[in-house]
Each structure stands twice: as C-alpha cells, then as structure tokens.
Image (tube, rainbow, N blue to C red; front, top):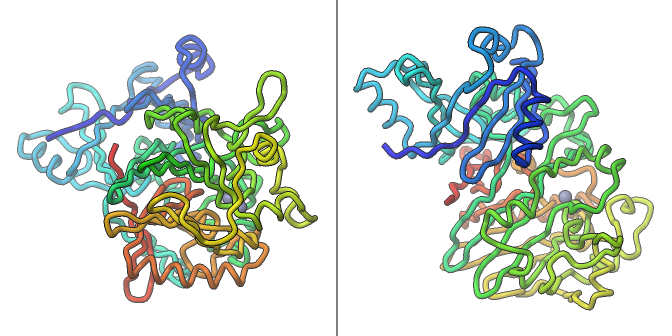
Length: 458
Ligand SMILES: [Zn+2]
Ligand SMILES: [Zn+2]
C-alpha cells in the first residue's frame, strides 16, 4: 500500500492562541474558517506544502471536539492518509486484524471515498484513509433532484459532508491540480473564494432545488471558487485571473471574499511566477475574472500583474466593459483592464480564432454579448474552459442559468450545443466557479446528465 499524508487534524481549546502560534509566530496562511454547524465545529485549514494542517475548534459544549479536548486535552485529533485504492487498503488492514471503524468506504468531500481506522489498531491515533474521486455519478436534472433526493449521490454542503464522515473528511480548499492533454499541460489554480446571491446564481430555479446543490449562508449567498487555468505548451497562458487584491473592505464584505490562499500561492505551488506567463486570455471582463489582471503598487498606481504578458480580450467585450450601463456596471471595474491599454499590453481580437497552438476562443454570448469560452485541443483530446456559460457543476442542467446573464436565451442555446458536444466528444470541462470540482466529464445516462470529476496529477 502506498499512502501519502493528506492532512493532520488538531483539536484546539483556545483558537486565538492557536492562531497566534500557527499564523503569527510561524507565519503560515490560514484559510477563512469553515463552520460545520451539525457538529458544532469550526475548522481552520492551513496549507503546508503537499499536506495541510486543520485546526478544529468546538463551537458548543456538546461538540465532539469539545468532548475530545475535555477528555484528552488539546492536540492531535486525526491524521488522513491518501491511498490509491481504498478498498484494497481496507481489505489488507482487515486481513491483518486491524480494527476498522468503517468496513466499507463512505463518501467524503469532493467525491472522495473515506474510511476510518480505530485508534486501538493505530497506536493511539485516529487514522482516516482517503481515495480521491475517480468516477462519481451525479444527476443534476431538477425533476430528479426534486423527486429522488437519494439519487443525488453528492452533497458537498459542509453539514452533510460532516454527517457522512464524522467531520474529519473535509477538503476545504482547492489546491492546484494538473491535467495532461496531449502535448499540453493544464493547471487549474485558485484565487480563493467569493460569495454571490444564491437566487441570482440560479435564475428561475426555485431555492428549494438549488440549495440542495449549494447551501446558502445567512445572507443568502453561495460560496464560489475562482479557478484560473494555466495552459502550458510552447508558451504559457493563463485564462482569467480571479479577483485580485485591489478591492475595498466594503467590497470584500459584500462579496464574502476569502483570499487567504490566492493566485500567488497556487501559481507558486505550480512552480510558476507571474513573469513566466506569456499570454493572459480573458473570457470576459467581470471583476471575478479580470480583477487579477492588474495590481496596485505601494504608490497607489495600478499596473499589469503579469509583467511580460500580452493580454488578449475580445473587442466586443472590451467595448461593452468600457461603456457600461445601469444593468452591468457593478460587474465592470475599470481599474481591472483600462491600465492594460495604457501600458500597451492589450490586444483585441475580433472573431473566434486560435490564440496559441491548440487554443482557440469561441463566443458563447448569453452571459454578456461577447462572453467567450476557450477550447483546448491536443493529441486528439479536447478540453473546454467554459467560464460563466456553466460556472459550476450545479449549472449543468440546461435551465439552470445565471440570473446575471444579460441574454439568457442565448446562454440556453449555447449550452445546448456545448453539452451535446461535451458528452459526445468526452470533453474535459473546467468549472471556473465550482467550490469543489475543478474539472470533469459530462456523462449522460438514461437521458440525464451528470459530472464525473476528473482525476488530476499532483
Ligand atoms: Zn461573469
Ligand atoms: Zn464569474
């Protein structure tokens, strides 16, 4: 059995003191905390190279973490080992007489399979085994969700994940994930998370349906990732760049921005620096896609974030973004892109065309008149970065369309065409805003479509 350390869970009594050590004294970055309401636990996730630390804090006296701390004092709560084949691992352990809490794996976050081994067999440590998702059936059709919730195999809401996995199996943060496509390497990065109104994210879909897919917070917002994509071939391209770091405290509060771990971190983890990027390609110029195109220096001046790059924007989108109106103004913030023109690094393209070998853009319209997706082809395989055409895996059903879209019927038409193509040609689809799944394949079974998360290389 080959096992890799995934994360270490630490039960803490005084979270302020723990943060003073891990964040302030050690200087580590800590993610915004995640509340697992059903377990009365708050988890603070600390990326540390290939593995992570997870500080677990009780929020009520009857929390399992409170009981743990009361009985044994603060300290090591569990360790999680990643294995390739969890069933084989469990069989091997069982054959050797290990006491298993779970004889069979259960479903954890991100579609992972998890199982716990009893501390009596592990010399006093609760051990979790985890196998990253390979094939997971998902069904997102509204009728199906309404009639047969038991068929919805995946529910990633923290509460549900915790119930299913005794709170320790959560995977809080997207790291970078690598995929090979023919001669190209695709690296999904993260610029952290933000929150948008759940109603606006699902248009005409009623809340009882969408909240099963995406739980909302007390302000009715749903948590969304920002996942720019690196394409490496002869040249290095980044598609979109997240939110960036120029916004005010008020903006950060309204949009629930969490960027403790951001594009700088995941770019570095992928072994890249901003200077390595040759081409920055925009799907459109909304702030959650173009915010990271520029950065503000200590003198307050805004300049291009990627110093060597040419920035490629569709001309129609540029014209709309620089002539905003009442309906789209909140999404277009000129500091994100006008400085590119001033710096002479802006290149406007007119049509669907090839941007670099294997990479071409295709206008979808719908979300904005000139919103475009990116098709990546190499070695007979195709990947698609669909941006806000289908921002999350919950948006796979045709009618699950953003309320933000300026031309929703155009979105519907573009989605129908793309979905058919994606199923038939087994296109690897990147979901820019999905909080849990960076990329997957759309499969159709008995007329229903679902997403099978793609395995990444780490
Ligand atoms: Zn958008
Ligand atoms: Zn967006």
